[in-house]
Length: 369
Ligand SMILES: Nc1ncnc2c1ncn2[C@@H]1O[C@H](COP(=O)(O)OP(=O)(O)O)[C@@H](O)[C@H]1O
Ligand SMILES: [Mg+2]
Image (cartoon, rainbow, N blue to C red; front, side):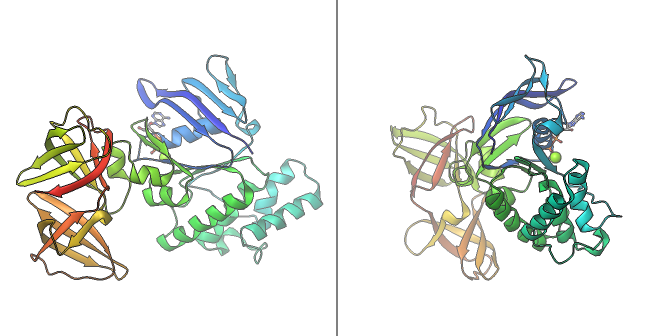
């Protein structure tokens, strides 16, 4: 199974830079998600790997073979890149049965009848649609149609599967089910998956590695939990996670290499890290995940409950601290009345610091003083 390499890929539409000098190394068998807000360059990146869009400059390799190079004037046709695509609008052929929808591409490639039959049956089983080979697309649910589309894409055994928001037309419950199916499929086929989504939860749950883009720039390329726990900058910190990370700006004064006093309005805290703190602490940003805001009986800082939203398994608390709204997630059901006062602290070692430019600096612990 192949490994994909993007080297300094830039794509311009006129003067507009849609993808800016992107380099990515996608390992054999990886499940990569291209994640980012609408318009950040996800689809353009995917289409360039597929060969449907020509980069302005750079090089793309699939399995160590150059499939695109602006310098060497190489541009291998999409059909010769060994990739399968699945797009958001995966229109099945309405006048063909499920069986024929899957078989059609193989027949076009002049596969022998018994080989086509064997392959279609394998796929029907793999995608759990073996009960209805003779139905027409209109007789299937959205999720079943989606599976047929996936089976059709997989039929020729593509070494790489490129998917552009393939689940966005499905309802929430079905989307959850299909996510699990895709993960299983990745495991069973061993193919390299590149998957576009703007949904951070989808990216987190599916990927072996997330490639997070903003305005055509690579923000971070790391496994999901690294992106979650050690976001490269404040954009990533804010984009990943729900409820979003608590992000507060402070002005700081260094006490020594590892400790500083940070203040925001009436809030003052001592920040301590094992790492050496940034030289310039005049403006720093502190980030705390909602699950690391802990309600406490002793110490901490007093906050006013704005709203408490119990949903059974967990409770989201919106808390007011000066002009800052803090969110806190607790396991289980608690229901604090609005305007009641409680105390919270931030879990040790979970408090991220970003420097003046918004880049990740360190993680550490705080004491409210
Ligand atoms: N064919 C095109 N001509 C001009 N601009 C384009 C074209 N395709 C995409 N763009 C622009 O490039 C940017 C990235 O688009 P796209 O890759 O589709 O974003 P995403 O998939 O992340 O939402 C957008 O600003 C989009 O408007
Ligand atoms: Mg897109």
